[in-house]
Length: 167
Image 1 (tube, rainbow, N blue to C red):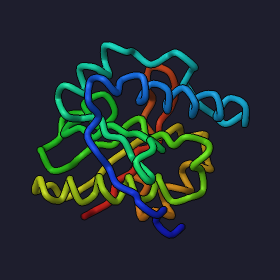
Image 2 (tube, rainbow, N blue to C red; image 1 turned 60 degrees about the vertical axis):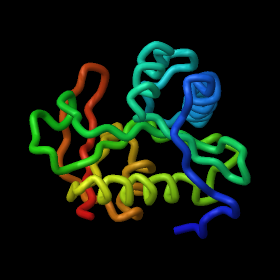
Image 3 (cartoon, rainbow, N blue to C red; image 1 turned 30 degrees about the vertical axis):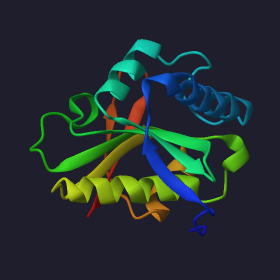
């Protein structure tokens, strides 16, 4: 794993930061497509209203490096679509994205570490996430970050691999 970037911190996204959040996701989507990585993300394909709703619920976060937005993610307390009905024992990370200019600098690992600490502080035992089953690179990334493969699930647009980490 990479050493944390200097001046790294995570902050809840504010409604006025919607364009920053969507911009980070669009940059990541473009990079994934240009790199010919498996993805269902599309430039401009993220719902502004959905993200505004998630921001209003305190579920969207921005990873900052020296006060510059470097990444974003969503942290929720249930995920019926991918994980089904479950007891309230986990946090669920979605839309983890890093600006390509910050790739390889440990931003993603730091954001996951922050999500782990936040989830633990809420009295939850697991941090869970999903990714495209065919994306071996991101699966290796999550496994190297301490997540364990659970199973594959067929979704509306792709098959996802489910991962969890016991906290």
